[in-house]
Length: 100
Figure 1 (tube, helix red, strand yellow):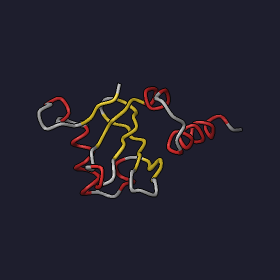
Figure 2 (figure 1 turned 60 degrees about the vertical axis):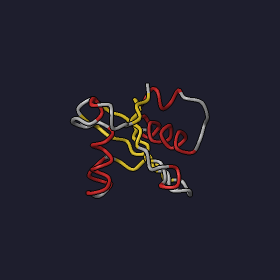
Figure 3 (figure 1 turned 90 degrees about the vertical axis):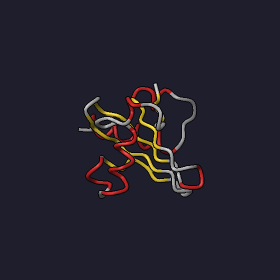
């Protein structure tokens, strides 16, 4: 289930909601928000985060696309359509956990 922040959705404005992630991204270094996962050439960015709801992927769209912030559960991120480079990077990162 993906969650897109909107101003009329109070659930997303509370602790660690998508709006909180956007505020953190604007005021802090990316390493303090979560682990940078992937940055595309068009300016989209993905972060692996741990917040009060668990581990998730946060996608920050580029400014030309509106700069929207979307929080996705890791399973939803991996199961959605497409095999873009951001998904490939997540699979690579998971693979490093089992290398020995």
